[in-house]
Amino acid sequence: MKKLQILGTGCAKCNQLAAATQQAACACGIEYEMEKITDFLRFADFGVMITPALVVDGEVKVSGKVPSQEELKKLLA
Image (tube, rainbow, N blue to C red):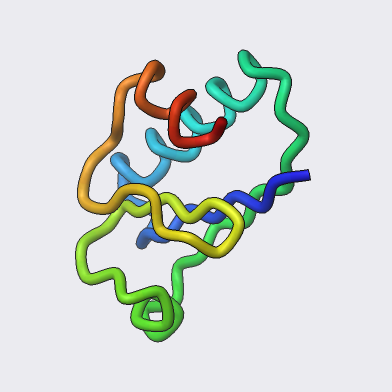
């Protein structure tokens, strides 16, 4: 099971990244647990300065944008 974390303040782009990531994971048949992190101090733990960001199993995969479905599928694979 993959651990997916969305880092963001709860803004529209953060919510868009969360929804797009869920769609991509379901399309790939990936079992996952998703956590939304809104605490600025935790962003720093990951070295993220620009949100939204996607963290997969502890590794930052994207920051500052919402990737396309195809990009997300590759990042989750």
